[in-house]
Amino acid sequence: MQGLKKASGIALFLATILILIIGFQKAMVAPVDAQQGEVYRIFYYHVPSAISALCFPYINLIGALGYLYFRRKDEIKAAAWDALALAGAEITTVYCTIGLVTGSLWGRVAWGIWWTWDERLTTFLLLWLLYVSYLLLRRFSPPGQTSTLASVLSVFAAVDVPIVYYSIRWFRTQHPSPVFGGGDGAGLDKSMYPAFLWNLAGWFLWGCIMIGFRLISARRERLAELQEAI
Image (cartoon, rainbow, N blue to C red; front, top):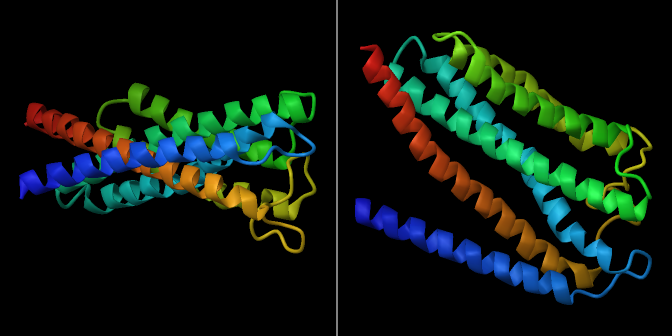
């Protein structure tokens, strides 16, 4: 059984690498945007990373709620859920960082500015700050209270996700209007879908794999801490 899990993990890892390579190839041969030129190709990395950054916080939230439920009932199960929350927070921070950096690079070329305090960008920056705060809290909070305090922060951080999502629907912002679900005129040109979907699948799977790897190591760390406490 352990061998089958390992083989499945390796197969998923290799498949994800292949998907990312195909996604890169599709992004490089996609038709050039008439208005933005070649720089628009950053879209194929900015949007998938930003979408993933709005999905992974819920892995953190699930882990946090699992920890809060089991913390007084089963320390080992609580440690496992806490490890999942930590893994989700770390990957969320990485993907938010990629979204902010690629967005700033794109904005500098498209708008002539690196940053503007509009609703979408500000709420997304707040999401990044919340997860950076989560990681700092776990590192510097008093021993014995770390996981509980971090789990409570996870709940507040997850609340910002729908606010980020709806920000460009509630307000007229500098950020472009919604690509998907934005009403008449929204959506991608058909020629853009292959590159976008391959990259979306590739970067989402890559994030899931990284969460899996981090979960394994974080569980070992938490179990070791429990054994030391005993």
